[in-house]
Length: 99
Image: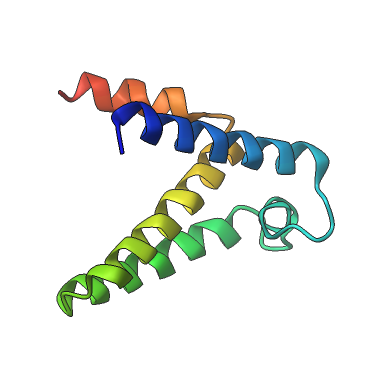
């Protein structure tokens, strides 16, 4: 996979997240995070949960589970960015400044 492919995947995923935020379809897990009774705490708790699961997978050297939990963290991170009216370009800009 090239860097451009990875960028495209993140951009497409974030676009879907933004669309779910705008449309709030009833059958969407993503939309449920935006409307959850706990508010933003729902996605923040998921980030904590997924982080713990990633740490345990890394401790067990379970490469498949590391990839799975990492994807969960990235997804929930993007949802949180959308909640805070930030986007992938904000993340890219911050990472670029740290080069």
